Each structure stands twice: as structure tokens, then as C-alpha cells.
Image (cartoon, rainbow, N blue to C red):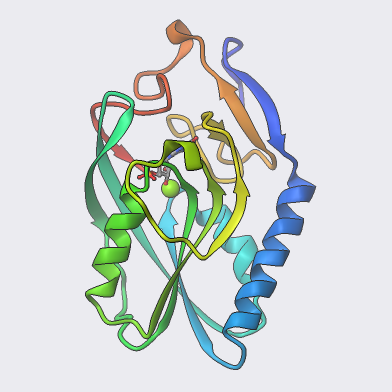
Length: 198
Ligand code: IMP
Ligand code: MG
């Protein structure tokens, strides 16, 4: 990757700490659903790395599906207008579903997805997020498995991007963007007024 010299990355969570925490989260899930089948739903694209590490640490019968969503942000905030751009491939009726998301910020995305999935009558619906920016919350949401509570800064790496970049970093890093160096759509807290894929 050829980083823009004006974008500064500062490590917030090292790969080793992330891996340790993902193992702990997987152990909790395994205990909570002992002897049962769990169906993980990853929110593309950001959660793909977290999900792929998490699923391999859960020694239960596990199945997997994905959704993709976009949302319209107003200035630097999600507007709450979430749109599904890729729906599930299979029914979740009667299943123990765990929605897996990379980061919880305003809460609009997870709130929307929780309501949508509950209409499909899963047996249980839980949410696992790697990162929780509690300071960014606009919409209250209940999450069951949280990796790390982090400050209200824009972060990249371990699946999280800025305008499509940095998903492949092993660590989670704070991205400092001088206003004039930020690509369109990544200014301030990474929001744009355009439809933004997650
Ligand atoms: P929200 O909770 O609806 O505001 O949205 C959460 C989504 O916003 C996540 O799935 C990410 O795609 C994106 N997001 C929020 N904060 C960050 C960040 O710091 N870095 C990268 N993406 C973020
Ligand atoms: Mg995401």
C-alpha cells in the first residue's frame, strides 16, 4: 500500500491484543450456545476479517451468511437511512443468529439490522462487535459481545477502511486526516453526504 504521506496512522490496538480478545469473545459465544447451532451473519465489507478470525475459534456447529448495507450520512453523521444492498442467501427462521459487525458508532446500522432480522423470526438474535465507539451513539442499541470500547476517533485496519483503503492492516489504527488531505467521503469522522458502503 502506498500511503498518502499526509494521512497519519497511530496504532490503537495491536494485532496480538485483537487476537486475544477475539478468542475470548469466541469462548463466551461457545459457552452461551453450548451444544447448539449458531448462524453468524457478517456485515460486509468491514466485518469480514473479524468474522473470519472469530468463526474459527468457535468449536460448535456454525453456519455463515453475509449482508451488505449502505447508508446516507448527513454531514459527519449517519442519517439512519440504511439500505440493504445484499440480503441474506438463506432463511434465519428458528436459528440462533449472531450479527457480526466491525464497529458500532451512531448505532443506526445495527439498530436497523436488528429490527429487520427480528421480523424474520430467529430463535435468538445477538450482536457481536469488535469495536464500540460509545461516544458516537445516537440510537440506543443492545450488543451482547463487545471487543473493545474505543474513543470517538476514526479508525482503520483489521477490516475497517477509509475510502476503501487500509482494511488489510493487522492492527487497528487511528487515522489522522488533515482537512485538505482527506479523500472525499473520509472527512471529519469518515462520513460523506453520498451513499456510503460499509
Ligand atoms: P453506525 O453505528 O450506523 O454509525 O455505523 C457503523 C458503521 O460506520 C460501521 O459499520 C463502519 O462501516 C462505519 N464506521 C463508523 N466508524 C468508523 C471508523 O472509525 N472507521 C471506519 N468505519 C467506521
Ligand atoms: Mg461495517
